[in-house]
Every structure is written in C-alpha cells, then in structure tokens.
Image (cartoon, rainbow, N blue to C red; front, side, top):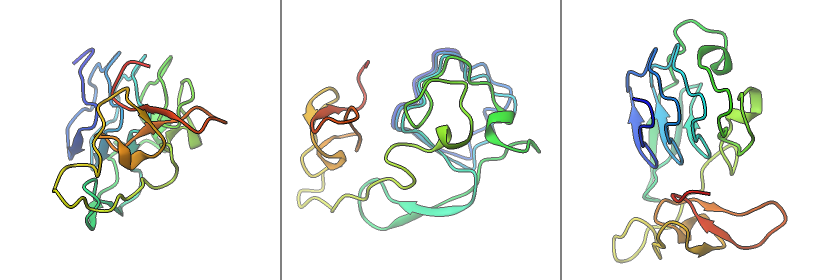
Length: 161
C-alpha cells in the first residue's frame, strides 16, 4: 500500500496493522476504530488527519449532526507514537515527524469545524477546489483551509503543498 491515497477518506474500522504505508497520503482523513499496530507511515502526509485515540462523537463532515468515532486499536501499545512508525512524516498538526504527543492532534485542534449545512445540498457551502484561495475551512470542498501561521489567507487542502 506504499504511496496509497486516502486524502479526505472516512476510514472506519479499517485494518492497516503491519501495512507499509510509506509516502501514503492521509490528508484530512478520519480514522475511527482503525487497526494500526505496526503500520509504517514513514514519509506519509498526515496533515489534519484525525487519528482518534479515545471513543468520542465528532461533527459530521457534511455539517449536519455528529457521528460516533471509536478509538483506534493500538494492538496493546501504550500510545499511537509507539504503535506506528512516522519518521519523516508530516504530522496531523503540520509538524514534521516522527509524530508524538500533541503532533497527533489535527489542525484546528482538538475538534474539526462543523460547517452550516448548505441550502443546495453540496458538500461545502461554497465548495472551492483544492489549492483555491480560502479564509475558512467551510469554503473548501475538503473542509480544510491551510492558512500559514500569521497569515489571513491560505489554500484549500487536497493539493501538493
């Protein structure tokens, strides 16, 4: 599964234990109840991915209501940074790996923004394509706007940064 593309994917209860996911893209992905023990995420793009380590309820990506998100199965490991390898990865918080502690918290942290439901039923109120200029997560089709620290304008997620 080296180089696999899971950007924006909802990966619920997926079995990735022991998988070689080197250079895989998990940008904006949500992993609830995933099995990850021994996964190799070396050089993976994990920016804003949600690796839920405790069971909780999270905002539904379409902006309507919430969904239950089970904790990731760490195969008995004490923490996510012990369960997987993340050398040279881009961590969920935007820092460079190896990922540890708060680096596993996606931006904006700790919860994803819930957008108001659009009148026309589209995924985002004004769905802009990846790389388009944005000021807010809800402007983008993937519901994530990369805004550099100190800036007021960024680019919609889903493109090579």
